[in-house]
Image (cartoon, rainbow, N blue to C red):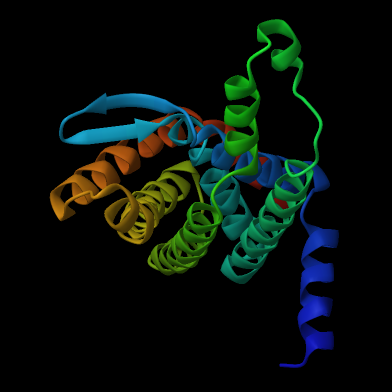
Length: 227
């Protein structure tokens, strides 16, 4: 496949999929990477960050796109969102190298606060790249499983949508989370394999519960797109 064909496929996907859906997909991917810098829950054998609270959003959007436009379109859009996230990280990283001060510095007069904000917004290159690779892998699994499960059914109602979405999300989120912990948490923070598995399972369970709560909305959106 040539570069022109690849560009044509991406352009065709962006014309077909509602712009609001893609905008929310990109916003959620960028936001969850920023929120991943803050701890949500921590015990000796498990740690979850705030990014898990919204990381289900890209996957339910991909499930809707899978149903309405196909698995390849869903994967290509998620890949484009990942690329935009990397570009955003690069811009943030460069801006944090400027000599300016954050508003909090003028409130606290503390360089520690200013430096901490720079480090948080600027992020770690290895962590961002690890997150991008893990999400790319999870997106591929999500699209493949969603489409494969959908082929097992002749009907196309909410029950089928739920089975497709829940099964693909559970597996893909585990793959995403586990890949991230292996790439980032194990070498950088000294996590054990047990901690990685527990984190991946707990994160996948939390994200699956949130997707279940909003699955009716996702089904209605995908049905409207099909119409």
